[in-house]
Length: 334
Ligand code: SF4
Image (cartoon, rainbow, N blue to C red; front, side):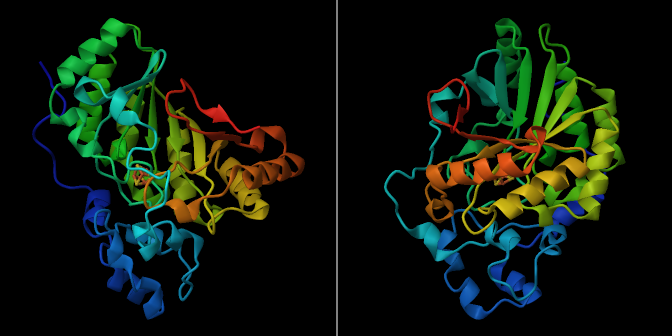
């Protein structure tokens, strides 16, 4: 019987080389971007969640600007070491929902499968930054049990999450999708990924072949927070994904200093739509320890959202939501 992950891997792809060559050293990053020394003064305060950023993403940052909105999302700072009441390692209480083999079961009819703990980038505000997801992934065993549970449950939608599921090689992804395709009640697979935004070369011929072989992948939810993240290389990657017939959606996180103004959010929505992506969710920050400095309070978020509703056609305005532990779906902020 084929198990996930499969064994022998072919030679590394170009995107895997780029990932290996990603920047992990703040001094190197500062030098590449001509940042002043004080911009990285306390960057080692976040040693438990180190810097990781592909050069392709760094290339879209403004040189000499320590407030660049792309940089702020990935640069560790001393603020992360500040203990803020209410901010915890597992803000969505996901530990309580983990089942065997990397399954997270919070939603009726849908199951989330943690496929890997690896990401192409370390986003400083990530709600998974402190939780040991890598210990829970399906690849660590018990995958057969997870599949059996999904089949027995009559799960209709599997959400591949992580980490970032496109961290898996094409071969592993192919094997995983093949196994999921055998589930009797499954209608679709959804993939949540930031790869096409931060490392668009991940969308190569190999990945496109996998997606074409597995039309049950009906939805890819991207994660882009700022219009400047979407350059020509990202637009080309998104066009290639769309050509497989997959529906592209985006979820953004509302982040202080990054995208907490109506001009930026409106431009992001327009840019996404130009690339065939529907703005889907605008999330309030999850209160994860180390990210409090990104918080935008609900009343300001409401005001920004109201401005978007005035400025954009309804289909371009993402739903403003927050995740509340224990609720069976995202909670709209009204
Ligand atoms: S899970 Fe997504 S948001 Fe979190 S660090 Fe990885 S890529 Fe960033």
